[in-house]
Image 1: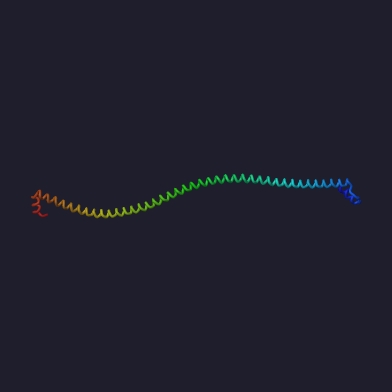
Image 2 (image 1 turned 120 degrees about the vertical axis):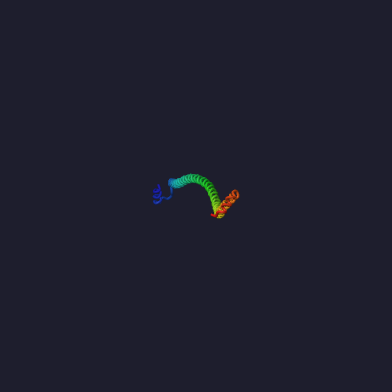
Length: 173
């Protein structure tokens, strides 16, 4: 149809006829319809592509949210465990502090006991020295008492038996 219109224009047709005007209008309408269809198809393709991207992003968002919720759940479990471990740590640190305090007191009392034992040992050694001296004096006193007792027994015997005393004096030994 377009070719015929060009051919007629080339031949020098004077004035366009009603049929030519009608054909031109139809051609323009078809061109406009084709242009509209092409633009609609392009827009539909663009919309489909955008919709695909939106659906993909929504899927990624849903997965990211699910992953975040899972991570939050694990984090809550970890926080609970950390709190429990902190409580246990505080308990253990308290027990360690008590044990260290007991050890310090024990060490101090151990040193105190060692000092007391050393003092007691020194006093015992001093008492042993005193006891040795007293034992020697006692031994000397016992010998002297023994000699005195023997002399007293002799004197008593002489007093009871004067004849022996006189006879014993007459005979020197």
